[in-house]
Length: 337
Ligand code: SF4
Image (cartoon, rainbow, N blue to C red; front, side, top):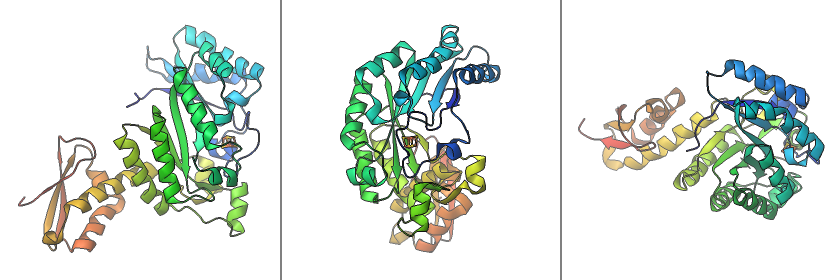
């Protein structure tokens, strides 16, 4: 697993983006109106430093734009602003997100020079048709090529994918996940599509040209995607958009927006394991499941949905959970308890 780090986020909404992808409005998604300038970087670090426990260095993270597509002098000014804090240990390293078609060797050399350790690539899909319909402006080949260059240059690589995009299908998303595992990223972010107000996707949806990717669609699909990444030993560092005031109060008009999407997906994965342990001989019985410590709530499901589903499907008299020292995601049915 990638160790958890204290993050000082700096948002550069749409900075460097050659155009707008149909689903995207970084201002509404990040809640930040304008891109950070070098003085904002310094301010964010100093404010972040005040919140950090003594002696812990943080990671400075540039999010929300296409960092390596920003004019070089502006990239350097932003990175230069962080340099004194790297030297005094306030910041341990830097991460940034960018587009696959904005990576080349000279760019990677520059990032290394300024102390960048992690590069996140917004790939979104490995399906050419989905990339075309979402107006991404790059190909699956660009993504594969950029991912290999980032890894070969010694950076930590995080790949971002989305589900439920225009032209997407669950099978295409599963294929994207499988192709990601071949690129051996150090982590992935999975973002089910949210319809954000006033984006081109919002217009397509209102015109009836795009079918909403619901929370339920996303939970079912992301449970399968999580199994693929888990089996490959690749951590999912984020599942679902970070909730913001703007999104929660009207800017997320549809799609898979849920403040606890990751929890819902985890519960669905436990439900699959619980289901697999039951058979006709359990019909009408009371069942006790052993689950890993701290996982009773995930195994029960939000508002007891897992318990209700199993009770309905098997006419169970009761469902109980006991916590044991067991590996994450393992479940055992205890009979005669
Ligand atoms: S998805 Fe990425 S490249 Fe596309 S507009 Fe948003 S920030 Fe820019």
